[in-house]
Amino acid sequence: MELISPSKSVGLCLVLSVIYVSSLYVWNSKEKRDHPSTILKRFLSVFLVMSISPLFLYVSSSQTLLSRVALWEAMGFRRDGLIVAFAIPLILTALLFLGPISMQIYSGVWRLYFRPTYWFSSFCDILWLRNHVVAPLSEEFTFRACMLPILLQSFTPNVAIFLVPLFFAVAHFHHIIERLRTGMEVKTAVTISCFQFSYTYIFGVYSAYLFTKTGHFVAPFVVHAFCNHMGFPDLMELSNHPNKRLLQFLYILGLVSWIILLPIVTKPSMYSNNLYADYL
Image (spheres, rainbow, N blue to C red):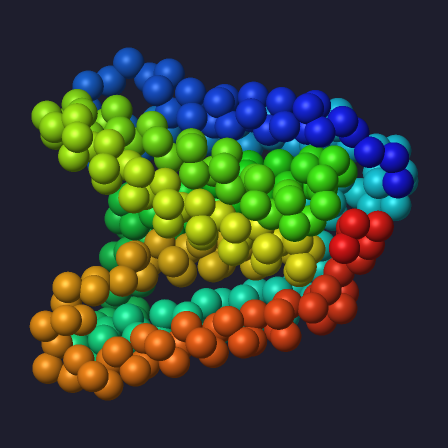
């Protein structure tokens, strides 16, 4: 399969990431990022970016790739292995969060998830929709479904998996602008943004790995939504918990189990994935 030059693929991804972030600031508004009017405007922005993102993949795709699969299939939108691609990565990621989930069960938070009123109020909450639906949808669509197939035509999977999260993580640096607008000190804003960059990059590697191995968009999307819901583990709460020893064991057990199972349950054959057979 013929390749596009690395400089071209990186350049296309860079332009696309700049467009994505810039679209969030085209609106002349003084409202904060969590204000409903700001959220609605940004919804429109990212949906417009999503409408043009596939064009970047189309113009960079080799004729060999497009003659073998449709553009949408190259982006991970296909039926073969869909249910497996939804369930297994989600269960695997939940295992990684075994400790935090156990803390939620202990505190009774999980009881809320069995109440229809919780889900009704959530889907009526624009902030919840942004964090659990629109943000994961638009980010995975742009940074994984569109960018990763571009990079896979220029780099090996291992390189592409570690390269594409750089665009994803750097794109989150725009939050530093909003923190400074609220009056936060520069040092504090930079420190928080650097920490966010670190865990965003790590998640980006995981998400790119899931996309490459499963060949499905739904895998990184559902995992992204779940991770946004769980948030970063509250280690301070863990240190003060009455069942600290047990929970620490569950934290370690979840992490070790995730590491062991990750290569086992992400074999491309499990997901009918031969999209990038020439590269995998």
